[in-house]
Length: 65
Image (cartoon, rainbow, N blue to C red; front, side, top):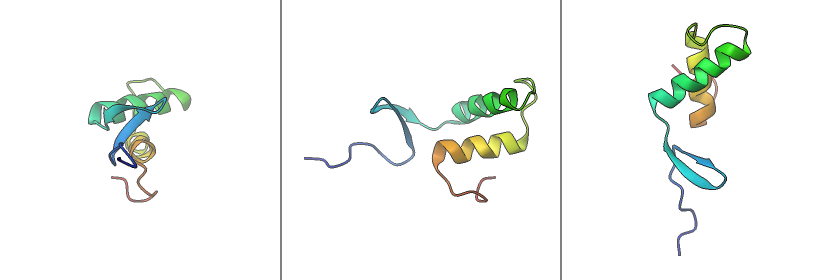
C-alpha cells in the first residue's frame, strides 16, 4: 500500500492530481496576481512571476528567479 500517491511538484485540486507545474500555469497565476494588483493581465512583472512560482511550487521565499 502506498502512503502518498502524490509526487513532489504536482498540484492537487479536491485531493485529485491536476499535473506538474508548467510555465503556462505559472504565467496564468502571475496574470491573476497582476489583476489583483490593479494591472492588466498583459502587464505581468517579474515579481508577479516569482510570486506565482513560489506559490505553486512551494519554494521558500527568496529562492525564486
